[in-house]
Length: 164
Image (tube, rainbow, N blue to C red):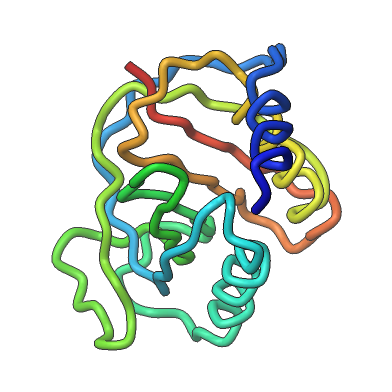
């Protein structure tokens, strides 16, 4: 990436955005799913995340699933790179298949954004706006929680961003 492009993106991310959110204290959650490392500056980031969701669509229901919500989790941040896990919340003690990863969403304080709309476009725009906000983020774990339903063009989605 050229310096000018990087500087332009940096300035764009630093613009102030005013999105409404609630503060929630969450209990620990266990998530099982497929995991891959990517980052905001990686050209293949959309393909990596999209590929994880495509792969997840092929999974039949596993025992130990807590609910019908889907999780898109971002953790192990190092600069602008992070692990992405696509899966769902499981009960403690659930046996994890060998081709999947189990991660923990830590208990803590989160900014909760409530979205309604297309599962791709709405979430992409929300993350673009969140990155521009002046939140005191911890960069420990952030996640999307797709509420129960089949309408991919008009779904309720919660984005949780870990904050101090």
